[in-house]
Image 1 (cartoon, rainbow, N blue to C red):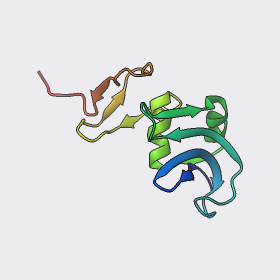
Image 2 (image 1 turned 90 degrees about the vertical axis):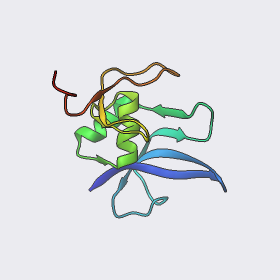
Image 3 (image 1 turned 135 degrees about the vertical axis):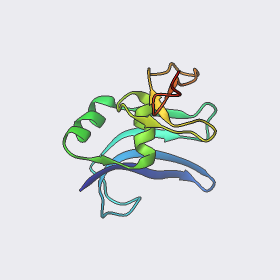
Image 4 (image 1 turned 180 degrees about the vertical axis):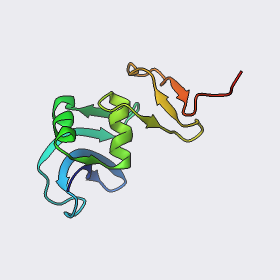
Length: 114
């Protein structure tokens, strides 16, 4: 089974990651088929670049994203779905945010009845 997952790069205590397509049985930093993006959580603001065409291609061909990669793909608009952040209720992304703008999140269960 193919997975879209993070491959750790960078130095000690300065991690950066590549989003890669790899066989699920291979090690975290082992062999991979293709790099589809980069993610650096240490920069301010964080760096996230994804080749959306290639990510969609691999998703259409059966690759399963890990939980972290799924959240990153939702953030850039490749996937629609639930996101959750510490301190925020789970919900759906209603629009793809512009750089530096907050996400719009709706309640997952439709909110309170009025």
